Image (cartoon, rainbow, N blue to C red; front, top):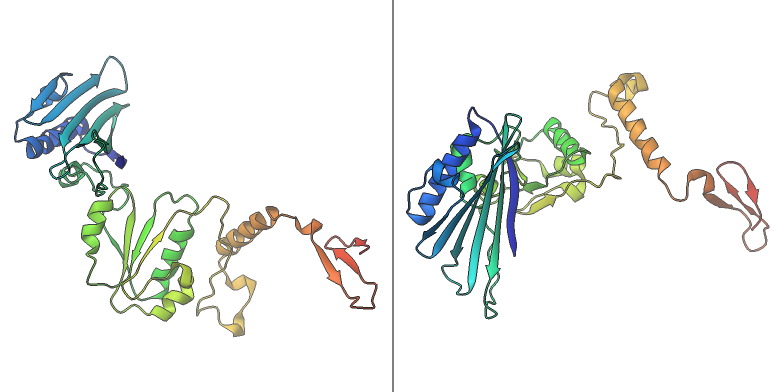
Length: 298
């Protein structure tokens, strides 16, 4: 069963060497055996008590790849093995690292469901400052009790190129945001609210669909490519006594109209095909008129 899979872009001089060093440290914490970079590059197998460390490498041409497969039995469930596959890839002077964690049930008597977890090696990468600054969820984000912060968060929700979920957490004593973010680093961004958040203002800006309160957690997945936002924010500075199209930022109006045009273009049936029933009643003749002005008989 697949438990975890992720890929991280690494930053640092000699990132490949430092990544392999991090793997050595992680393996020592798991096996109590000392590993070196040369051992990881050897392409050999290393039995460690009930565990096994297998290494692979491909270095004849770019991309250079170094892989480690660590297998060990479950400490509580007989018949289940855990497999962690780590691959460091270096190409064009850049380094990335993929991590895959899965279970392999070798007995038909295994009935329990494994608990999802994040491999501890991710923590080694972060503590060694190897993760790129663009990594999702390096730190939690907090929304303050003001309209600007909420509007910015709404823009992030609707951002068309967002590929990661947002885990929106309301104030709660049961969830520690920083610990949750540590588990979700590289997968999702944890967002919290300040303790003085006005729930009414939040609902006004984010709507009930994306709001979160009373200890709840709202997981906001990336938008479908067909979903666009075409609302225009009207804040206090656009008072009714001087409400004019010239008062709105040109970029905001342009984006809103362009997004609305996208929605209209994808309507099925199209506007020109949509008909409206007119008059008639029980005794009237009436007719149907579409938006292009063509009248069709009932």
